[in-house]
Amino acid sequence: MSLYQPLQPPKIENRILNSDYNYQEFPPSEDLKKYISCYWTMDYHPSEVRKLHRIIPDACVDIIFNLNSNSVAEAAFLTGLMTEFEIVNLTNSYSLLGIRIFADTAHHFLKHPIAEWSTRHVMLEDIYGDAILSTIEEIVTISSRSKMMEKIENELRKWLRYNKQKVNHLLNISIQYMYEYQGNLSISSLAKKINYSERSIRRTFQELLGVCPKEFINIIRFQNTLRGLYTNPTKRLTDLASTYGYYDQSHFIHHFKRYYGKLPTQISS
Image (cartoon, rainbow, N blue to C red):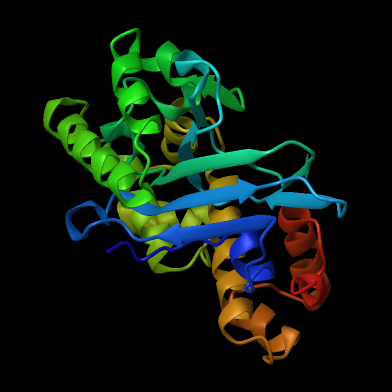
């Protein structure tokens, strides 16, 4: 299992499900846990009360199936790495199923580096070609969500068998250290640990992920801080900031608000 497990706002802010808006997460099978953070579903039915769906950076990419799509070609897409929060004003019905994939293992499922899919949404057909359309159609027409995820897992296992992209050692070991230290280390200290130059680390992250390593490590630190706040909401913010290496509380709050769009004291509302 990965040392890193990110959170998204619906998991934190909507602990009580309601009939209009329903977000859930499901763990992958044991053999896929090193690649997949979770599967998630989001269903929304318009009501008189406006609903805002918040999405935050999590150092992952997502393959998302739109189960309400009228076109198979538009029913599945990839979302790239996020570096800032996004708020979606839900006005139409939604029924989505997503695969949250760790950035350091995404190359097993994609034909090209994440950096090449820098736009927010890329249709799966643009990545895999027409051959993927029959698989998408099979998935979105399954009536049972559990059967749908079972089908997805079987497809992921096929991609793992046939995708021969090589692992980039520098990227892989860098991210593993970032996970291990919960984002609480500098790029210079990382360079010493893995015996590569800072310049090589920066170039590799930009070429393969499309983000600088400092941004990536900050997202991991933010996500670990968020989980610390989520699991221990009564902990003092000064103690939380110190635990994750923020040099003062104002730095911590600024960093948190940048990625979440709210203050730490507001995330339960």
